[in-house]
Image 1 (cartoon, rainbow, N blue to C red):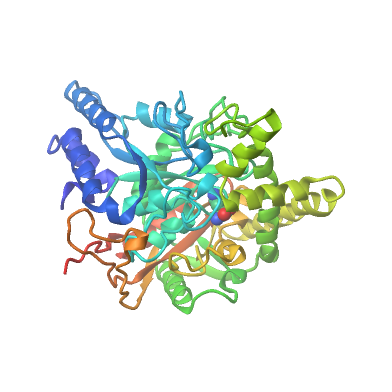
Image 2 (tube, helix red, strand yellow):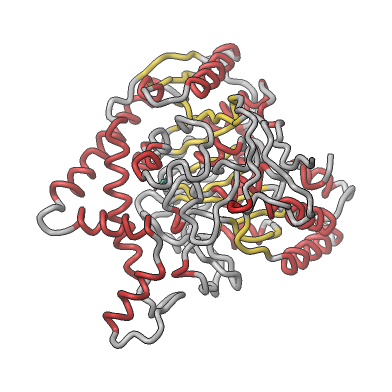
Length: 515
Ligand code: GLN
């Protein structure tokens, strides 16, 4: 196995045995990025010099007898999480020149654990989207088929990981942005319980929903990453001061007698037959492992989408008011007065989807409409949460699909925001309820061979002068496992048991085919 193909736990074993050095490992990842990222476009910013410095420091520490939970492990960070001294653009023109002077708390925790930072990954502008097509800079390509989206908004992190351009990655999940790209790229990705992980230094989108989450090549890696970032943080007033278990102790392939609910609303019209089949097969695997499976209902599921898009846009409109051209990033030049400066800055700095959401949110919050929209949505949010409360009295976890479809084509949904929003139908309820959920690979749907050489989309010569094209790899399907608040351990346990019984997580895309 080549170094960039390692999992975190695999790499840690080799590093601890001194079979490899962190410097070698980091260099292998940087080489891999040079090799494939022209095609994938997962990274917005690379930090090779500091990555190698961090790796050398990790080697020195190890030589001095120190260990760390992630000592020498190269990671990718979504570009809405602040890393001191490195541009944090949020995929937006308005923050193009913003260089934070501080680290997000998760980054501080990762540094203490010895991690190496390879760079910042692409996302939909301000994490608003499901495909990375809303990035102001470029769209990331799905490594399984370069003509398709990697999901979003953490599509850069998910694509980087499955293309072996990082050993682990972080994203943020407001309505599915870790789980949906994890599903579309065939990796494991978790949205922890609201408050479990600090958001200090995460650029705010919708504050009652946002949560940073880990993406791993397998469930063990997710647990290792979560171990480092799940902490109380006095700098985040929504942070939970709850005991933090060692999540790796949850990794036992033993789920006999666990009660697993299958919400019937998660198999509604609109789900692709191949997705349904893969998920039903996965549920059978869980049954074969001895879990007690039963159908259940989350009756308010159909309201999750309207509720989410009211609340998330309302909160976004308030959070994004701070981008006025005075405090951060882009500022329109030559404005005759302050009002015009605000207007021009926001007009040029924000993309279409962000503007749409600011307008929707401002409308929902405005006098005369507040009760009808915002307040009503808050009430229905409580009903959605109560659905889960009731379900978790009967079941340890709930399972279903993460996304109703496999990865869709780049451009397919950009002109139809509602279709785009529908990609999240199964991932919106959990953040609304504040609970945790994880997506992991559970199968593939075969895809037709795609003649995808398309210079306009950046799928081209990969910097080698040789033409490359997407391959008929089949497109991945994700299984979503939802657990109660602070139920990360049980979710990880079920995920691990499933993973041990299957081989989906070992499949890798063939990114390049030379011809
Ligand atoms: N795709 C959803 C949206 O556009 C979720 C985004 C997210 O989780 N950040 O809002």
